Length: 196
Image (cartoon, rainbow, N blue to C red):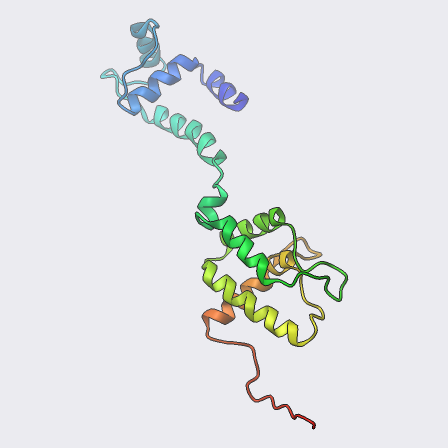
């Protein structure tokens, strides 16, 4: 807020005068009791309004600058980023992982709140559906189950893991890409022999 007031002071405008400009730009009748005609005269003399009381380009630029402070501060909700039933989907994702420690010594399942933050990042960065996420996760888990879960990532790090250079990588995104391209990652030519 301090930046906004400093910007108005720098332009020699009062908050009431800015409000009048904003009302003129949006075709709204002002709703405060002040000496309306005196404020309009000051705005005309300052080059903020034309004689016909329409706003000048200088006013339009200032209004857009100040409105941008409010637009940038709006943060999308988890529901907007991940869908209406995101928490149910996170729980379903978590249920896919085994309920034990991996050979690395870490639990396969991570806390739901950690997963929510990682899934927010995932869905802001990638455009896969929850169905693709589930299919990719099942494929990943199936491959690592065959190897005794050796070197498998936890449910949190499968979604997003920070590298040493502060970038992120997503094994989930790689597996989602495999799913959308119709790859299973499983070698169908593998033979096994039963010994009796």
